[in-house]
Image (cartoon, rainbow, N blue to C red; front, side, top):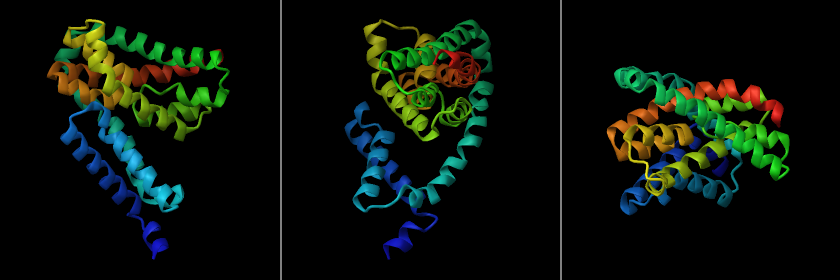
Length: 230
């Protein structure tokens, strides 16, 4: 009976959906950034797989369908750019400056820390694209010779960290301008961080969404160039 269930095509989709919905429910009840729906959902899925000794291959048979839609989701990032085109033109220089410097720092910080801790090159390649959206990050990781599954882990952890810490960082460093907040969050913690930016305000959310697009494109450029430093 167990084999029939776990080998079903919809098994991975169903438990992913249920786990995320539970995460959303907990977050709504607590209103604490620590209980991020993505983090809670991920922990629930891991717990289920471990508890019932279900292989990741069985889970991924259905979950791969979700992965398939990451590609179209990346293309859909053009939508916020189109909707906020006037805002982008107005703040073109801050957006591009933030995306260029932020994407560079995001990669170089991983390389320097990895060198300091003597981390294996493959792991470094895997975590170099940690600050961009998942579909682009996976492609960058593959190009560099990293492990895409580790890249996804790094992206998730980076996004959750940004989502949780963004308000505190803005407060500590007295970042008050809505545009600056949005650019910083979007470049540093992609879509998961952007969800927090949208809670902070419409301008913050819009600028964060715009920054995701350019940070992803620039990381595609920076990563192969900076690879020689690894």
